[in-house]
Length: 296
Image 1 (cartoon, rainbow, N blue to C red):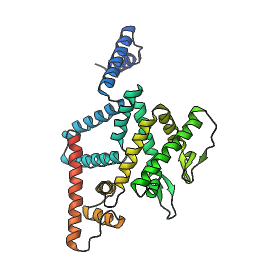
Image 2 (tube, one colour):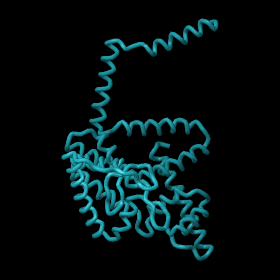
Image 3 (tube, rainbow, N blue to C red):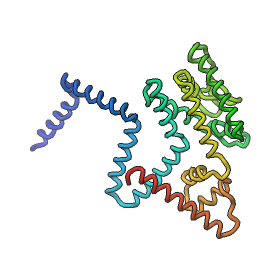
């Protein structure tokens, strides 16, 4: 076959891809999409879940054909992703979204996306403190709620605050002023205890409060209780988060954890060796668990 015939063959293939679907093909495509949507609804799965599973299945097939070094590197990245998902409460967002959508008849994916947006905006590091460091709105609010009673009182205040904004913004459509948050290009529309709150966060809270206020309240309670548990002194979850966020050898990570204050200081070489061993074991355990969850 000559070069001219090869070029004509490539052009014909391209034309076949760009041609319009026939009525029969369009009908079959709509039928496949309908069955796909029914299966998603039956098994309470979103398109985002399917994309996540397909991505990891493809990575698993590639890793099995390669050397163990890539598998080790992928395990480290997978463990970091799992620990980050725990802090971002992705499984809580999925559980509450499925329960709420089942009662209201809304799409699970839309509810879940708004829940995840709320968590991401609360964890966004945008607030400069007196020491010059930047913190998230969730971290600043949790520091003010040192006891379970203070946290419960804050959650009640938060519910009333969201309700007032939802009535003004979403129900009565009253105008609101917006301003750029200091040190950022994000627009703010409301203040909470003297701190600017982004417009994206307030819109998501307002929509969810109008749609299902009890579900939103339960979701925020579980999220703040988890974050308070993470921020407790000596929290194992916080230690795991920092282990995967820090880079270096197990000894360097152990020393960094002591400087941060996440673990007690090691006063003897034996204690430092024990701390280094704990870091190595925890990293290895998290890596094996992440690979096992992905079928590797």
